[in-house]
Amino acid sequence: QVQLVESGGGLVQAGGSLRLSCAASGSTSSINAMGWYRLAPGKQREMVAVISSGGSPRYVDSVKGRFAISRDNAKNTVYLQMNSLKPEDTAVYYCNAVRWGLTVTNYWGQGTQVTVSS
Image (tube, rainbow, N blue to C red; front, side, top):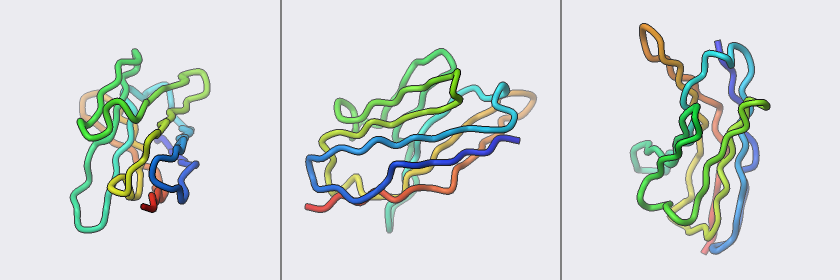
C-alpha cells in the first residue's frame, strides 16, 4: 500500500503562485508515475501534470508554461509549482501515484483546495 499526503494549497490572487507537495509513504519502491489531478465544481476530473519515474513530465495544455512538476525520489515527494495562477485553476488538487505490475494500481491523496481570486 501507498499513502499520499498533500500540502500547500490555499487562497491566492490571480497572477500569484503556489507550490503543492505530495509525500508518499508505505510501499514507495513500487511507485512508477506520480502526478496531480484536479476537480472543479461542475467539471470532470482532469490530469494536470504527471511525471514518470525517470523524470519525464507531461502537462494538460491549459497549464503549459505556467506549472512545473518535479519529483524527488529520495524523499518520495512530488511537487507542483503553479505560477501565473488564473481563477479557472480553482479546484481541489489530488496527488496520484501509479504502480505498474500485473495490474495497474492507482493511489490517491485526500486532496488540497486551491482557490484563485480574480
